[in-house]
Amino acid sequence: MSQLDHRQVIAIDGPAAAGKSTVARLLADRIGAMLFDTGALYRAVTLAAARAGISPGDGQALAGLTRRLRIEIAPASIDDGRQVDVLLDGEDVTWAIRTADIDARVSEVSAHPAVRDALLDAQRSITGGVKVVMVGRDIGTVVIPQAGAKIYLKASAAERARRRLAELQGRCIEATFEQVLDDLNARDAYDSSRETAPLAAANDAIVVDTDNRPVEEIVNEIQRIAEAAWRQAGVTGE
Ligand code: CDP
Image 1 (cartoon, rainbow, N blue to C red):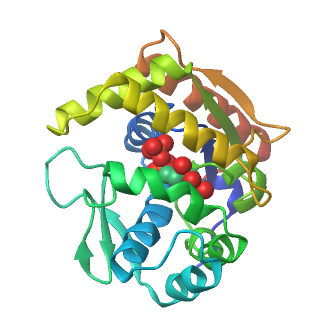
Image 2: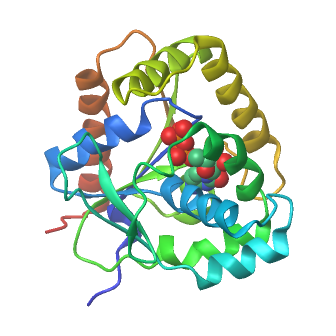
C-alpha cells in the first residue's frame, strides 16, 4: 500500500460543536473521501480510562493505556444517525463515547503530551490513494501540517450550544441549554490553553464562520477551496 500523500488531506479544525463532523461527512460523501474524526480517538481513550479507574490527571497511566488500546474507526454499519463506527478493542462504543460524562473528562485526558503522542501515529499512518477529510483540533497545526487545504470552522458559542442541544435531543438525552453551553465553553478554554497542540487555526488556514449559514453552503465553500488547492498543487487522487 502506498503512503498517503498528505496534500490529499482536507484538515478541518475548530472548537466543540462548530459543525465539523456534519460538514465533514457531507463533504467526504460528495468528493468520495474517507472521513477521519480524530475526536473519537480521544473520546475512546477517555472511556477506557474511566472504565479502568484511571484518573484524567494521571498522564503516565493514560499514555500506557492508550498504547495498549486498539481503537478502530470504520464506515457506519448501522443506520442510527452515526457518522462512523468506533470500536474499542472490538466493542462498538460509538454512542458510549458521546455522553456528558465523557464530555466532562475528555479535555483533561487530551491535554497530556504523552497521550497525544501515543495517538499521533494512528492519525498519520492512513495509507494512500484516497482523499481524506480529517477533523480535530490540531490537524492543520500538528498532525498533518502539509494538508492540501486547511479550514478552521468557527461559530458563536450560543449557536454551537443550540446545535449540540438539538443533537442530544435527537438522541433522547436530556440536557439544558446552560449545561451544554457550560460544557462547550469549559472544553474550549481547556483545549485552547493547553501547552501541547492547543486548539488553534494554522497560520495558513482559511477561517470559515458557520453562524447563520446553511450547511450546504459551507460544504460548497470548503469543496471549492480544496479543489482549487489541489489543482494548483497538481494533486489528482483516485
Ligand atoms: O464533537 P465535539 O466538537 O464536541 O468534540 P470532539 O471533536 O469529539 O473532541 C472531543 C475532545 O477531544 C476535544 O474537546 C479535545 O479535548 C479532544 N481532541 C483533541 O484534543 N484533539 C483532536 N485532534 C480532537 C479532539
